[in-house]
Length: 134
Image 1 (cartoon, rainbow, N blue to C red):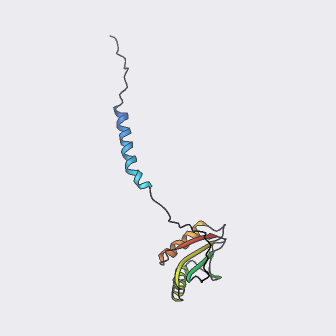
Image 2: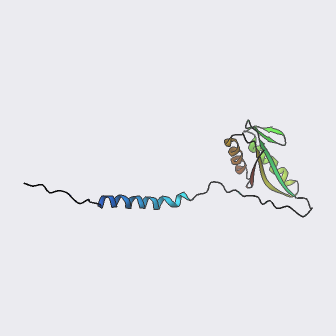
Image 3: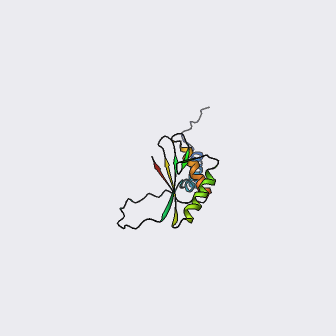
C-alpha cells in the first residue's frame, strides 16, 4: 500500500487569524488617537502699544529640591491648594483679570513635583497654565 503525500497547505486557519487581527486593530486604532496635554505655544510678537497689561499672572517657583515658592514664600504641598485659591482671589479682585498660572521650574526639579502643582492648580479652577525653566 502506497502512502499519499500531502502537497497542499490549508490556508483557512491562517486567513482566520489575519481577519481576527484586522478586526482587533480596527477596534483599537480609534482609541490610540488621544492627546495628553493641550499646550499653547506663545507667539513672540513685540507689543507696540505702551499701555500697561491689566492681566494678573500668578507665578509659582519649583526649586531643585522640589519646594514650592509663591512671592518668595515657601509653601508646603498640603497648603498649596489653599494658597493658590487665596492668591487667585487676590489677583482677581485687584482690578484687571486673572490671566493664569506661570510655573517656573528648575531644570533639575522632579517631573512629579511640577505635575502635582499642575493638578492642584486645575483642581482649584485655574485653567490657563504656562511652564518655563529657570
